Length: 181
Image (cartoon, rainbow, N blue to C red; front, side):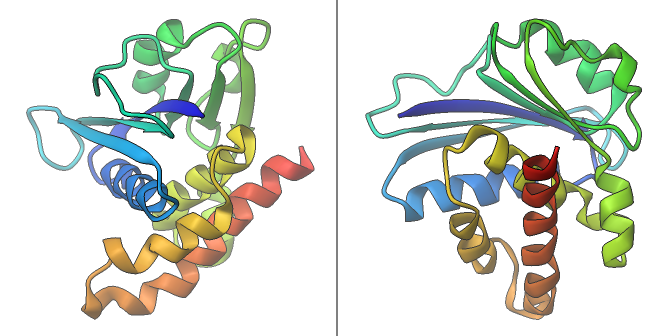
């Protein structure tokens, strides 16, 4: 098994959090993994992306130019990374803030997920990142949803552990949305 993903958006959207969560979930499943964050020059609001590679074999390099999958949280991320996505790759896009008309349909397996809208129904738009990760897990099938849910306590501090049940629900909502599409 080998899967890689570039997760991209702007600072404050939780891009690094879900990349980190994915890496922990993979390790908990006994997989090899790498997590490589990239920040723009600004803090909040600047560009942010990370690359996560998962494999059942040793990983030669964490650098991925043409990924097998992509999670994009905003329009600039689509513009930058969609052309690099491998033919037949999985694209999961937050169409609450991305125009679905610019998403490639023929070359890619594209999943348009209104993540902000789904997260709002859960009570906070801050859960959009978890909705997107749940959607990606369902779209790729590379890890069970329960693996990510089980690793939540590794990315949230003890003071924020009260947020775990809501994040579990957001992951589930994202997966259910893709399953229903």
